[in-house]
Image 1 (tube, rainbow, N blue to C red):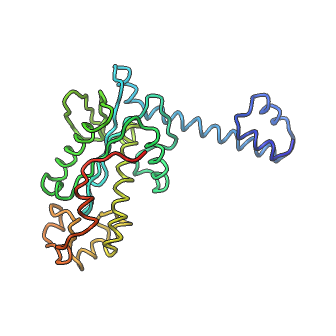
Image 2: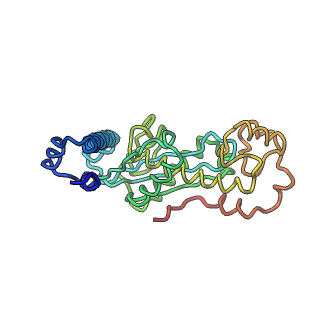
Image 3: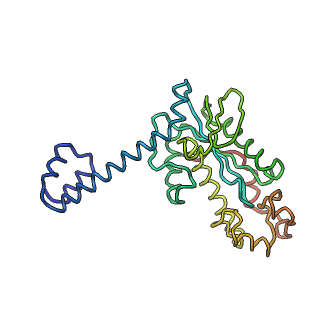
Length: 276
């Protein structure tokens, strides 16, 4: 059998008999393919085991009688500019999403790939875009709590349990569990972290086209050197959080007094579900 033919079979669930035959094949090319196959298989098994461990909190709730368990997380509590985005995700009980992890541990490309898979796989998703004005009015802690409460109440499927990343929360008729470092310990929270992060990054990339001097595409509103320099030179935009230092002491530039076609729709969008 030719090497290319062997390669095709190895990529399509080969039988134990076939693998045994390859082990007896003296050709170096065949042995290299076989080693690669076993390495790939071992990695896949390790990833499946890791993911099962990531479902520990969900499994506990299912065993306790829950039919649906939601994970909740946010993106954007710390930046000087841009909205806060909160997401809730309910994954099927038999779910397996290879590579799913805390969004902060993933590359932008991997987050985009996982975002697409989560949207296709999830039983329900709710996303809340909390405006800068709400952040400044409520304070970031209360705005986060309110955003999390909203996403849970707007899910198309009501969960019996909500796993929340490091935030105490109360929702009537729902068991809410605060999980420290939950985005690294729970598959549902990790999924919510990816949805929230990708959604917010897309918003900041759109804002970057309107405010290129602030470097929003790269810093996503955080206080990078470029961002701080732009604040010093140009002042704060209406997308900057007035309750955060050093923005607090800055006035709104004259150019920002005018109506902005991008600002209004995004600011007024409080809750939506991603397209499937």
